[in-house]
Image (cartoon, rainbow over all chains, first blue to last red; front, side, top):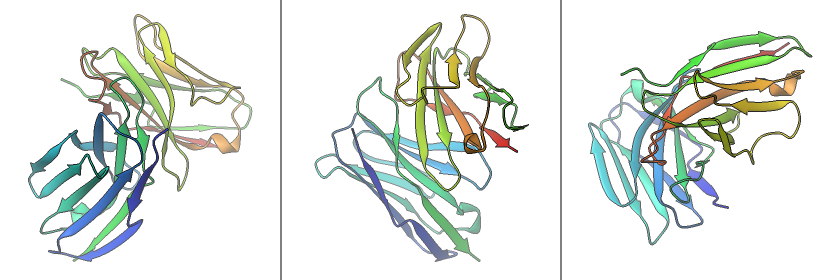
Length: 109
Length: 114
């Protein structure tokens, strides 16, 4: 069974800072997801990736399959980016997601 | 195209009552997953269903919990005789048959057991 570790658990940043959140997993995967959850809110899927790099606005996600590691970067952070960011992996195409415990990000104006 | 819908968004039950949580997948999606998020904990898989079939229920508690996804209508997660420890956010996600990895999440149902 895959184990997913995220770091850091909590992160406080000043508005405008460049932010990196890390995710490591133990077993080869078919896909990795980055999710965003606002306090008391639902879950939004930010990225699904199986190789390389994806970019959407100020968000960038990278994955290194050999090292079993992914990073989520936020450029020019803003208070509205404050949320819990969750990494999840799927071992194969038809297995449920295994989640990390999340990284709680607070961006201060 | 509406996203994944869950209702109710908030549900309050007293100990011993039954809770029914509904999930309507995105149009064209035939796979539904239920996840539970306990307070201050990460999301945990509960059950994976296709229409009229339970594919994987390895994450479901053995007692009081059941799930179904009928041919017509939403998927339902049913919790009988609720206890305080069942208080959590329950999320469902759906995916199309062609891409199990492409899961879209609903807004969740927050269950509070008094």
